[in-house]
Length: 328
Image (cartoon, one colour):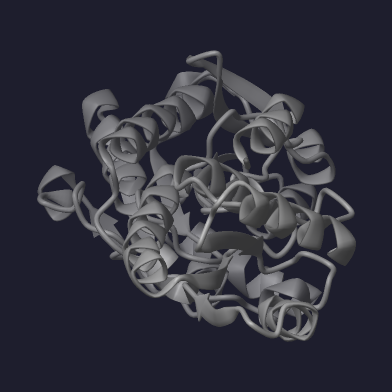
């Protein structure tokens, strides 16, 4: 598609929110302004596209949002968009608002929806990876991951203060239903005794062996970081089993939950979001579609959406080795 064929780009934030989505939105809007094309914001993701919640956006409409968490366009999941009738309504609103192409800021579920929409109605689109889990293939980092990671580390550091004051063992659950990137990195950065993640088939005896090593080396308190998707039953079951094994341990459980999704984005997330927002508009103007903008080795890359959806970033095996070396 030639550059002159795109006169209006629609942008939405979809799926789970992530810190830095506003920075990406700002970059898309101002990149459109730079190229002399219109930009329209779609509120509430695909549901807003169906309900025609579409607003004109210009450079001033995204002032003072680069530092804000969440998304000013809001986000929602849409069961209606999964159906052919819902997508037909969305297309009618696309035409009514004279939108020529879309930028979708979200995760693999959002990209799957855009891929189906493009196949049916031939609407060019580019994805921008916004998810705290960092599990989307085709980019070293996703928007929101660094902020979520720093939020988790800050919380774990505070918990360590009380753990050491009372000689306690804390099981701390962080987000990561299908991916252990937050758990692994925050665990290493906060000096956890053990880290449990979905990608590694952990055994309860391995956890006990790690706690035993710590006790033999003189540790009086320990932090165990657990991804919510690990397969040993969850933090409460882990705490229960550990109490049975070590009845003298003072054991506590903390679930960090949705605080990891909120907060002002870090510098790294603001810069990443800005780069990817501009890259998404550049891609559309160059005629690209069904691709996701990402960074690899600090360079902008475009990955076919089929790969981004079907594949997943893999855990760094060197980091797993580091956890074994440092947990002494």
